[in-house]
Image (tube, rainbow, N blue to C red; front, side, top):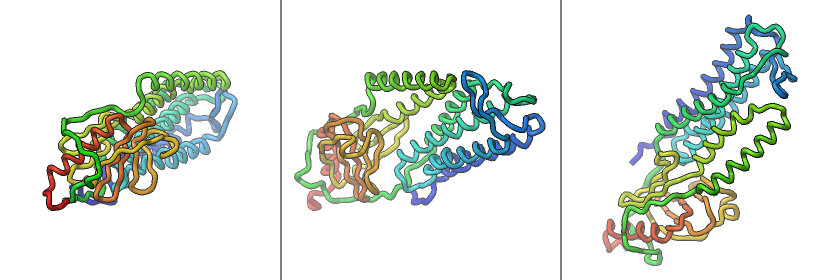
Length: 324
């Protein structure tokens, strides 16, 4: 059983301290390099030419606010120990990627202005932007791997209702969920076309440096592996066990029909009220796992009936008949 906590130590370090450290780095470097920087910085580029300017101090504080409010606002959720582990991991990776992007963009902006008297001559490289997103995402994945599931766990000795499905237990049952290869290729293609169009309108190609790492992140967050075995139900995302329920927690497993937008408002990891979570990636049958702590997990999969039958049969086998 997980230790009851209010805050996850790894989540606080990576979700709170890291963005705060990044924001402090922006302010420190602005002060350290102030003698080598012009009074104003080029903050907007069109066709490789600077056409927007702001004071160095106000630019630094803008970066600080974006890092703290957007990057830290997302990743800080990882510190809440009782929140759903998969959601905390996803938010940490997204927030860390934003933090990495902004910090890299800040350093790219500073180095482009070092020892310049006229900010109009600044030449901003797109390489730090792509590196920043990748490094930030990697830090987020590292932090996510250190998060632990501290949710409240309750066990039950009652057998699932007799009306719920049972089936032969041929374990493990492993299936994929989420974006398939074809859908992934279509979405990446559409995203690339939109990005290229925006780059042409802006007269700058720096958005392409962000597109690839962000696209890989989004695709990774929308691909899952679902496993049912003697231990219970587990959902893996980006190589990590993002969510797991034991057989001893099962009150009952059932099958329902799900339409992601109609029932959950979209695809991927979803929440519909406290304790009601879904990994919904397609229209069709879905496994519904109801836990003794009141939580409910819905996972869309073509093998929903097989998984529900196996889970209920496992619960029957582990509980005395007189508790039925």
